[in-house]
Image (cartoon, rainbow over all chains, first blue to last red; front, side, top):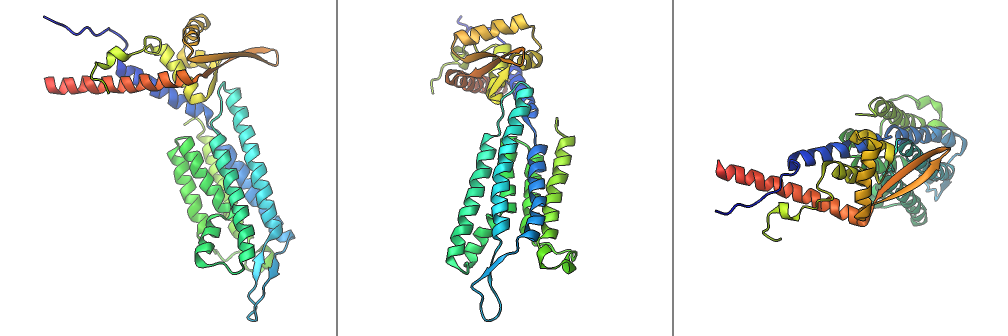
Length: 219
Length: 108
């Protein structure tokens, strides 16, 4: 009679379950989801006075009064604030992870965010040289608008943190950002405050999300 | 892939609850501090050091000692060989479970 000798070792299913549970606990300890939402929410709200202080530059005005509008001050604000914001987020993640005895897994998110900001800047500059954008280019520019690229980068963070709630939040945020919302308020505030309602909604949503994830930070 | 039983390919260094745990945490955390491992794996410092010694001797991890303020800290990172060993161990465990389930179903 022959027998296949199988060494008595640890139960493979239990080993695998233990490994999965440990991996999950590490991911939980590395999460600082509230931080990017807080930083990006403040950056968004900070854009409101910038739009007020730096009026748009009008060019290529047609006879019917339509002009090409470029918010130079606001664009420079977005690019600078977002790049600085991502550096603050990276430093925050590294600091928190280190204090918990771990490395951080934030780099792909920060690099995605920075790459999208640079892409947004390049697309805006290119579009300025083209004059009236085509419908397709208009869609691209809308997808590369600073508030939209914030949401697109959040999708990367949701994947990185394996966090379904953040994925749902990011998709909800993108829906809000891409849907022009006019609640009627701000109508009498004048042209300088025209961007304020949408920015207040976007920034408020990010801050609410930050509070939500801060309360659920170990879940 | 060969037809040999997955058990024959198991690496004794990695196929052990604590050492597999160390590799998993180091992989997931990018780097991990000695104290975090001790807490998560519920081990004494001496016991953890022994397991780390085995893994380091096998070239699966690197340890780096330093100070934060006046407090000494030891950081552990996975080597490329450690990543490969972990991936292979996980793959073999999955295969082993599948084999056991298949055998169980066919024998039922």
